Amino acid sequence: MKNIVPAFIMLFLLMGNTIFAQSNSDKKGFALLELYTSEGCSSCPPADELSGRIQNELKDKNVYVLAYHVDYWDKQGWKDIFSNADYTKRQYDYAKFMGKDPIYTPQVIINGKIDYVGSQETSLRNGIKSALVKPASASLSLETNQIDNNLSVNYSVEGTSKNSRLFIAVVQKEAKSNIKRGENANRVLTHYQIVRQLQSVDLNKVKKGTATVRLPKNFNTQYFEIIGFVQDMNSGAVLGVKRA
Image (cartoon, rainbow, N blue to C red; front, side):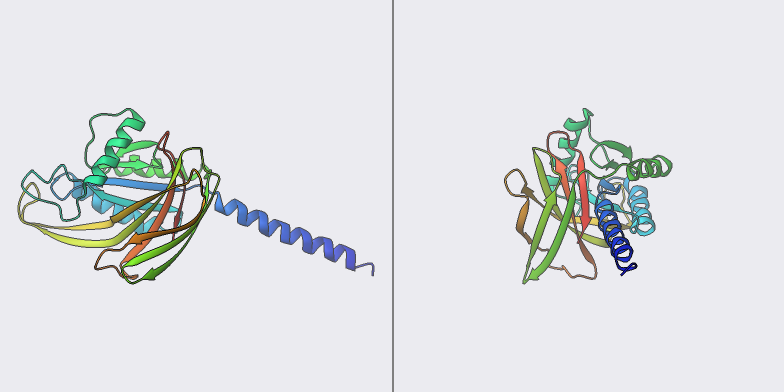
């Protein structure tokens, strides 16, 4: 009998440490890189390539890359097949959050707080290091289920601010484009982590539920992934992120 109580206490402490570690892992630091780019911009290919390298090198270190192809280059001789006016609007929203004007490409914004020229590798990597040491303020869980051309996303969020939204991005991991006109004429460009669909969910009333996301026609689980993140819409700060 003398050994039962100490053994029970030790088991309790071990279980408690495990739970504590799991809780802490949900709140560990992260870096969400949002790249604003375009096939029509001659300064963008180096930034695209750098984002691809960072994604490959750091994908297991809580680093996430989203590449938004804006549409304001589309009238300069070449229309980007991945461009979307909604992504241009998102970039303008960041300009308001950060008090920076005008917008530009290639621009990378880390955790919704600070921006970098997307091709400046040293500055960008230092920004990632700084972001990773700051714990997340929100935790997010995602479960997905594909039904025909739609994706059902079950989500649960903890630790949000008063005006938060959940963003669900459908991301194409890689694509190549043969550019025939514009500043990148006669080049074959490789793109990484292309946002093909971005849907938001208001978290002010319900922090747990199911969202339905429309999938691109060429969607498959091998070449695409789903990334969700929680954002404070008063400041633009990203509070937490998760890959499904």
